[in-house]
Length: 301
Ligand SMILES: Nc1ncnc2c1ncn2[C@@H]1O[C@H](COP(=O)(O)OP(=O)(O)OP(=O)(O)O)[C@@H](O)[C@H]1O
Image 1 (cartoon, rainbow, N blue to C red):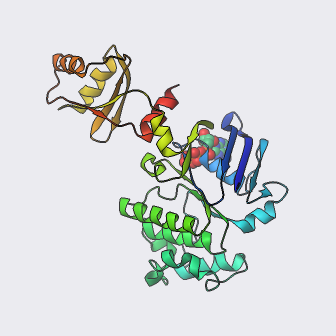
Image 2 (image 1 turned 30 degrees about the vertical axis):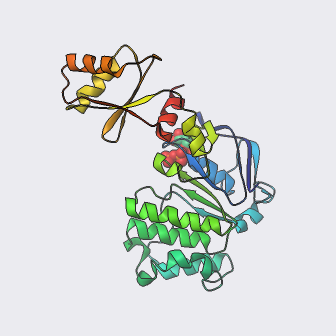
Image 3 (image 1 turned 120 degrees about the horizontal axis):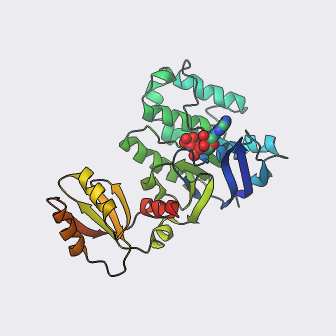
């Protein structure tokens, strides 16, 4: 195992940021920590990268204990914090040089590892980091986190605030790093990114909701889900929520995802109800569960 987390808890005063968290991440796994803002993801990253002490529990990274061997861990891991971690006044190249130097290495020594990513920002190597676009900042931050050839990479919400094309490119880069044997723990609030991980932990309010492969997590979802649309989405949500038999209602892209309490649910009955309530252009169609549906269901319990 590359990361072993056992019964970790951490509070800030009255806020239980992490409550009895246990997770194991295998060597070379691309592992996702999926949860909304405030779920405790950053707190867990800070503990695993030895920047914060847990109140309870233990953990090891690359075989080293987070407390006893904290210095060894710092050499073995790369950490890309959620907020932009680079020096805005330094150029692209200066930032990379800086991170290489503090780890006692050089850009040339480990260039192979970052080449794929760095070539994309190299044309801007003399530009100050503060003047880069979101996607380019992210590539530079990743290059900096990789420059000392870490065994384990921690990426805290690396794609937040990044455009969809750059997000896709970023995940392709992660897959290539995984192919090189690096273990990656990545957090994201985007459920579509969860599907790209080998395994995921769904986390909310410091508690684990579920751990499994994205495919298995979706298969656990037992209720039939329906896409529902109508001419007035606001009114539709209101009326669906008021429907006696509703189990869950939440917006999902252009439709509302609806589940019913009853086993023998007849969509025609719902259609008739919505029509009576003044909705027009009603669309009801069975759809597949996503990780987001599972998350919403588990979060309700
Ligand atoms: N230094 C702190 N002092 C007090 N409360 C804190 C502190 N850091 C985090 N918290 C609280 O702990 C909980 C978990 O925060 P954390 O930052 O770990 O979550 P997160 O999943 O990373 O979310 P975000 O994306 O918002 O950072 C939140 O309720 C947060 O407000």
